[in-house]
Length: 158
Image 1 (cartoon, rainbow, N blue to C red):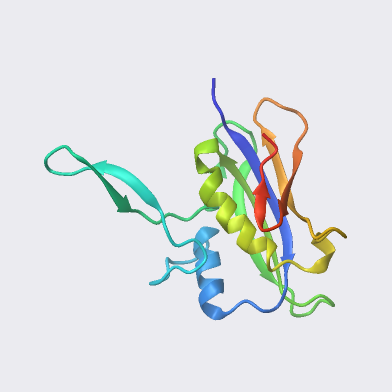
Image 2 (image 1 turned 120 degrees about the vertical axis):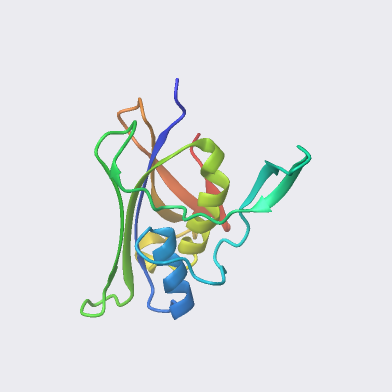
């Protein structure tokens, strides 16, 4: 049995992202090169074996919402996009992403989603400050569950 979920994110971001932030965000979405310096999600620790067979921790940065092409378990297509909103009343950026995600990836993806939540237009923010950032659906389920960021923390509905 597989623990794969569909992660769907769709938000409008305010027009206050710096150029380095946009470069890193595009990299995380799989639509741009990796920046020299990471500032949104900075640590990507993995345990590997050294030459003596001992476990060591290394940093292996990877884009977090960069899946593309046919989905393995959830059906449909994996994709991400970022579009400018310069000609629209709410200036900024529109972001959409549909990914397959395993619970082992929740922590790092959650860091990126919390960063995004801090930059969304108020239309995504509820009266209590909770941000609706997207949806999560177990691959065998028919109905997705709302994915929220509350008090700076992602609330995974699993």
